Length: 143
Image (cartoon, rainbow, N blue to C red; front, top):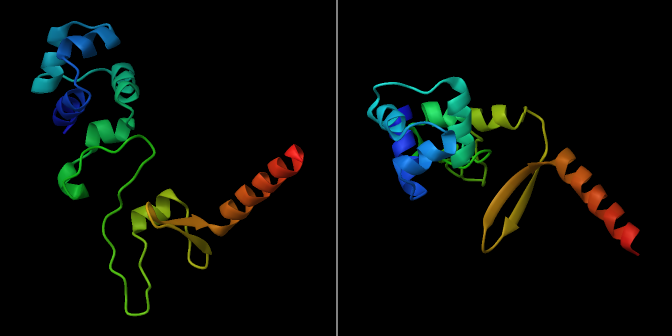
């Protein structure tokens, strides 16, 4: 997993092993060993790699494309929770991992936002209202 993710991210960013080695202040051979699975970097170097590639440390170490519709590692803070099926009355079931990450519990109200060119988005109503109030205050401050 780690070595495959490292290779994929490096190639995606069009970097050489030398480029990665320079950024982390290690030898190119060290990066080659990480990619070959012969060794793994220490935690500090792993954090630096995750920052370099803009992914979470957990995804760098554990991401498996097969678990995510074959898609590559998402940028830090971005998620693909899988597919859901729309029911007869338009209802969907939010995947358990998404509910956990976004702290969604039974009875919570969600705002459904839409943009014909971007798609749909769900947002907890209390977050939406707080954001709306902030925008209104900013607008009032400009008048």
